Amino acid sequence: MSFIDTHCHIDTILERTGGTAEALLEQMTPVPEAIIHIACDPDDFSWGKEFLQKKALSGIKIYGAFGVHPLAVEKFSPKAEEGILEGLKLPNTLALGEIGLDYHYEKYNADLQKKVFLRQLEIGLELKSNFVFHLREAEDDAFEILQKIDSENIKAHIHCYTGTAEFANKVLSLKGTYFFGFTGAVTFDKTATIREAAKAIPANRILLETDAPYLAPVPFRGKTCTPAMIPHIAQVLANVKEISLDDLLKICKENTNKMYGI
Ligand SMILES: [Zn+2]
Image (tube, rainbow, N blue to C red; front, side):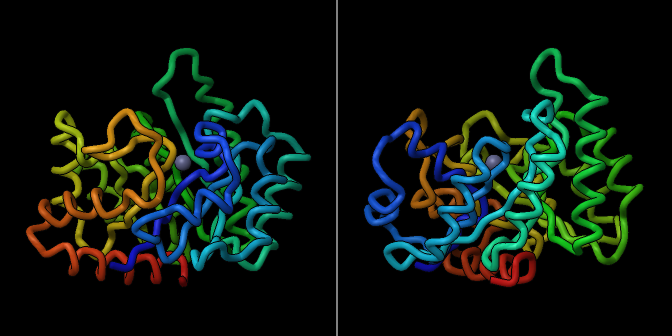
């Protein structure tokens, strides 16, 4: 079984489990072919850069992305911009992200989130980077921004997709190329709407990701999620798409290649 976790936070896993990245990756079964580590808080950029220098551990290839998460926008600064630019220079950095809008928690600052999202889009567009988007409970504002920046040149992974099938269809009608990442959230009892969205989105636009350490799939709920749990997410998506697990994994690998070139 060959798979890639296209979105995880290795440093945050280690905060929960203790131990080193070396030990974590060495113990992973089944073994992912590659992982994409997302550094999305300026305080974690230097850890991310050091981790990416390793390029591979225990045969698992290491890739990354750098950006300021919508829930960390108050840390966005000229220094944070510099950190993103340095991160993007690494040969195994594949995207700018995760960036976007998140209106889930009370007292969110929509104006600041939009400003920081737009600024990072500007940086990425100038550098012709790929993007990782985090869009949560902010579909109207997100769509307005996506329309504004839409072009054939933009390629983005909308990570941990929890939106509606309708919003996905709207995004797919844009000129850019958008992929939708599904996490363990697609396996939960109460998330029929996510499975409906997964059914509606064409198979050639789906990516596998864990968002580890968050959102461990069934049957690991309550545990710390790791990239090794991808097959459980893949199995549910295969059921939704009414195809075999092997076919689903094969399609997602092709999609990962189209999105990230790996
Ligand atoms: Zn994430």
